[in-house]
Image (cartoon, rainbow, N blue to C red; front, side):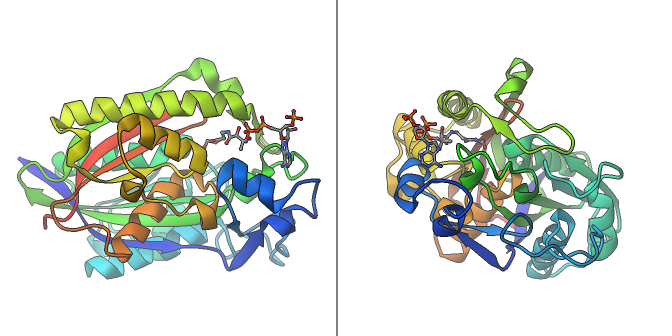
Length: 326
Ligand code: UT7
């Protein structure tokens, strides 16, 4: 039996910090309203109204693309693990905002990082990273020695900057982890992935237009789906909520995160949060919060981590992961 453990991690954020005051120059809103309704103070932007567009819109070398953020985070994770791209059997890039329609964004990223094996994208919206973690673990169980898993987004490019009901929510960034094979069951103790495709109309973007969202309905369903999925993963892992050292929810809205934590029976000090300074970065949000926790000494070898996300589709995903273990 072969399982996967995480041996390296890294993140990347665009330099441009967009404040709520900046957002208030686009339409009528206030810092107080945004903070109270979402918990977001700032977000990072690689595109959009607060960033000068790069002179050449080339996804391979343009500033602040999904690909460049992914490559930066992935490169840091490889370095942390003491590996080079050649050592990687599979690159999985989770994104819902790829730089191009064709080919998969992971192809350009694999060239930058010199990936030795295959490369593919996963688009499960904000549940993407957890979908990727389960997929990567499955590949390791099937014989892949090392997988580089990246969640990267430039959501500011898919934002409708005229829609004051949701434009303040989104930000850009990337987070990455390296998974390596070890003898035994590895770190993935239980998981749950799901989708209800009848709910596509709740949150979508057509080619060339910004996101449209029914925020209240997404909010309500997000709490239900996250709690139910997390409960399923706990059951599959045969552990209880008291065994969980850290809950790493999708960073969509502090009120959603706190509602999920409360329903699951978790106190605030066991919730990882970067939403105040990243906004909602979709596939990047869970690795950004996970790496932040690791770098701030909140994760120790053997700790059980509960990851849970939901997103457009509607998709949902959760996993119970044992930290460390190489
Ligand atoms: O990754 C998944 C992606 N999506 C999500 O997770 C989003 C889920 N939804 C949410 O997070 C929340 O629904 C929002 C943060 C988007 C909105 O919060 P809300 O508490 O659901 O507010 P609301 O839409 O009910 O709006 C309340 C009021 C309305 O005024 P009235 O009808 O009460 O007079 C809005 O017109 O706030 C008004 N409003 C604003 N006011 C100031 C809406 N947008 C703004 C704004 N600034 N930007």
